[in-house]
Image (cartoon, rainbow, N blue to C red; front, side, top):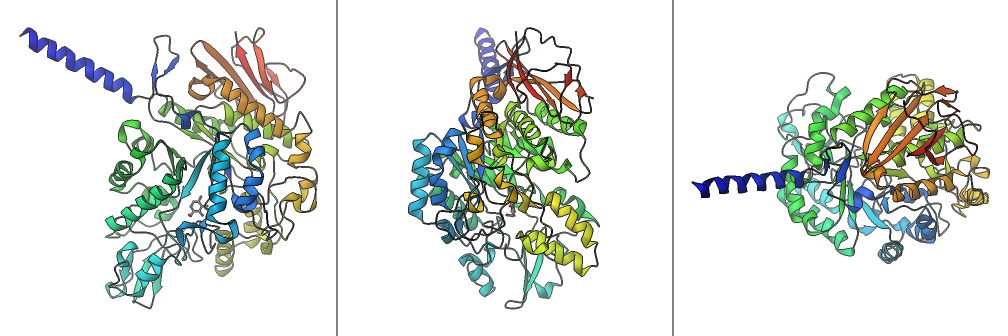
Length: 580
Ligand code: NOJ
């Protein structure tokens, strides 16, 4: 009897230990957070490089790996920990590298495998990790697999993609994000069948139901991980699994397509298999683009005990910015609900911009000359003081802005050009369309990095693949190096601040003055340390009521050089206090 009781107690203790280990952050009785699961990828600031636009070393107008190598000391000086590099693999560039024709080779315009090896070595020597893009929802139609696949119905590669034989009738409609007609089925007369492409016609979707395809993907991942890279950002990953009976979706499904395309069964089986075959063997990070349709979906992707991925990023915050503005209350609600859903378990990523968005300062801040620097620094303060891993897009540290092209000929982005044609075909409002893309087209975030005030902003000696923003004469890295108060030097202070205050990474987040329409205020606390962050998101004087006495607090960082008033904030004012 005694032995039975002892075994029950023993069992309960074990269960309690396992449960606490499975939760990444647990709470102390004093309600502050105790970190029991520190990870490098939680503490990292991830800086994203869009290689095509970063630095051109050979004058062909396209950024390249040698260009990045030339800027490694600059990257180190930012205080970032990891770089997410957009695709650099062989590609015909229908979608700037998101259409891969050889997963084990480097795109010619970007350089060679030797350049890649040198880049990785140079990064590691400087303590910077490398995260590569993994694009395996689709390949290029110029990939050998697809060439084989389309050649005949009996080719061994046929099942690497999704085909629908035409004698069965037309397949049920699927929406394509990038196609000129938004039709995701392309008829191919060679074998009298349709193939599926959620993105462009040149990006056929891979068939994850096929175990051979999955093994190929795991081998590709191991190929790069064995070279020493430190993780993957997984492109459009929430879409990889499909119901291959292709049921008819209700009318209007395309307005909410993630609900139908995202997280289809058995995606978690695939991820668990990938984890077992690949991730479990390396100390690397993984982040999925897209987090499904609910917190439950997101948790199922990233919770440590699921053995799938580390992080995912959702789109709801970046989606609220509109040409007519956005609600600061809404922004606060979104970040707050994500934070509370992940406070005890799982891990978040935090971002406001990337290569699929226009410039952060033009969408969420104010790029008018009098407010550009202030609002850019304010937004950077926000990103660097939230819980979760921040993803920071190249050029935002300079406060680079939207270019706002007037002519369609200046745009290079394939989906934008296809949509322009689509609007023309359906007699759409072209004037309105042109205005929308000035605000939101991703080319705005892809103009060349502004290094200095020399020809083409020091990006290339040739003709850049996309026009340089003419404001490079005033907004450029060289000028900002010399100015202690520049956005660039402010960003360096922010990365240092985050490094010096683990509470900014793991600490409990509490929003204050929630319904304030202008100001975002919150505290971050851990191990007896408490920081207060106050951000004015407006160009007006704004009032905030935090209920916290800051008279004895220390200002750790502010984007104004002269101290202000803690309840009346100046335009785009940002202050980080340490409370005593
Ligand atoms: C998401 C990527 O971020 C985007 O740039 C790309 O066009 C699509 N996936 C298709 O790969």
